[in-house]
Amino acid sequence: MNIAKNMEAIFVAALVVVSATSFATASAPAPRIHAPAAVQSGADANMTVVTVSAKRLSAAEKAELKG
Image 1 (cartoon, rainbow, N blue to C red):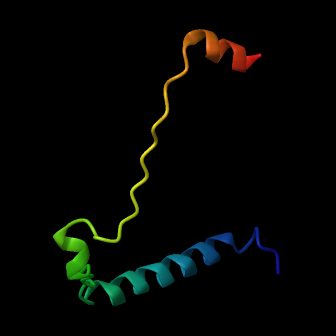
Image 2: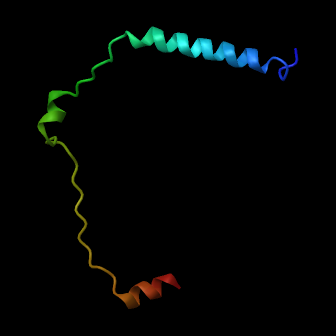
Image 3: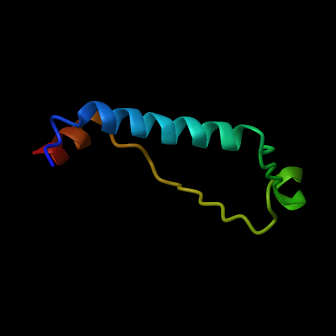
C-alpha cells in the first residue's frame, strides 16, 4: 500500500476519529479536583525552612574565584 497515494483517505479517517472523540467527550462534565483542606488553609506546620547566613562576596573575591 502506497501511503502517498492514500494520504487523503488517511487524513479524512483521522479527522473523523478526532471529531467523534471530541463530540463524545463534550457532553461529559469536567472533573472537579479539590485540594485537601490542610493545603488550602495555609502553610503546613511541618514545612522545612532553610536559612542561609553567609556574607556576600566582594568584587575582589568574585574576581579571584573566576580565575
